[in-house]
Image (tube, rainbow, N blue to C red; front, side, top):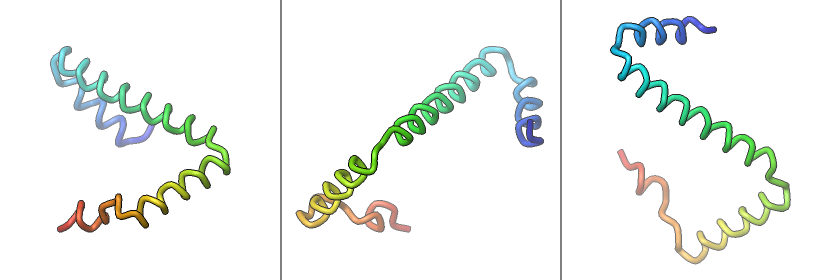
Length: 74
């Protein structure tokens, strides 16, 4: 276990049980979501990636996308 994780657990131990459970629930949900995405990516074939790339290029050409700098402007 990393020092950062040990520090986190040390701080969590100071919280009431209901807060510990709420944080643990959020972390477990996030971890499970990440694992599900990893499995999906691992199963994606080259043909599927290529099909998605073609679809994205078509959306860009048809003006159906928004440039990231418009979404995440400073």
